Length: 411
Ligand SMILES: *[C@@H]1O[C@H](CO)[C@@H](O)[C@H](O)[C@H]1NC(C)=O
Ligand SMILES: *[C@@H]1O[C@H](CO)[C@@H](O)[C@H](O)[C@H]1NC(C)=O
Image (tube, rainbow, N blue to C red; front, side, top):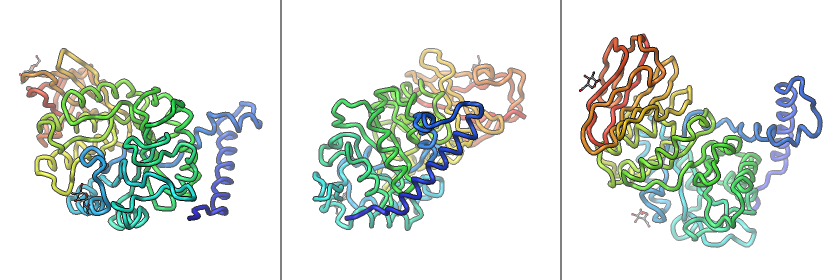
């Protein structure tokens, strides 16, 4: 199968060179320019960042947390159908993302990745077409090593350009790039190769790095990807969820429109946590500008899970255009206050009780970046109620493992 389109690739190449020259000359005024400048990695990185995607955190669904390797084209189509019929798509959940196990163990004679015939008999292109026909975007999974984590598919190490072209030819919109069988080569070497390959693939493809936070990707991945995992895998339990939330929090200052910290996909609806624990999970992920990738079976979602995933006010915090990651601003034993700024001088706040009994949690205006005298209106995002003219502080009785979430608007 031939995927190359020499003329369009050449024009993409020319366009990149032009853009590079333009940026060098317009932003480095006074600095000496020359050939050395063009090969300076910092100027090249600015180009790589610029795929225009992820201006707010990505939203959608991924197959792994619920289905692991038990996936097939029927499941993916039914999931796309459910995403639309449930109203989730209209709320912004637009990516339908395959995870591991979609391909055959070996490449074909030309070295191409091959969709698994027993589970994806119509091929990936047909599946992407179906997902697109529903008004959704289609994502796929690959690995920056010699094999994927399931060991049932080849990795893309050394095949970056070929695989990126294959994905582009299938109509892929999103790539999650995992880190198994990586032969000990630094991710800082392996991930930029795929970033460049995607950028010159002829299709605009969201790049989600998944090197598990091993080499502090927040410090180098913003230049090559739209999001990067900051931790190992989440699990469907309270201890692991809170632990990845804390690990991710350390990197808050590195997030910005176009590039986000990723504490892994949502477990909401998978059954391992209580409703209040899932509410906390969803609230903190939203506040922290984490990707909102649903990880349950949305074909058979229950009403409680719907209530969590379809909360427009909480989603609006996640998708706020300011794009500043909210973080833990106060901790008193198990009682925590998380907060972050929003557009129009508003502030988002979560009062989170991580202890084993109900407690009163208070956020003082000084804890959350407001002057004590500021008179504010407070919107409770889960109770859907408003309190007008609040001053100095906000407090609430919060049950064990539960949270309250607000937006605070200065009058
Ligand atoms: C497809 O996958 C789903 C989820 O694992 C499973 O329930 C279903 O039986 C599979 N269908 C086929 C045709 O294999
Ligand atoms: C919680 O504590 C604050 C500060 O001490 C107090 O003003 C408030 O009345 C308390 N609220 C509840 C619900 O107990």
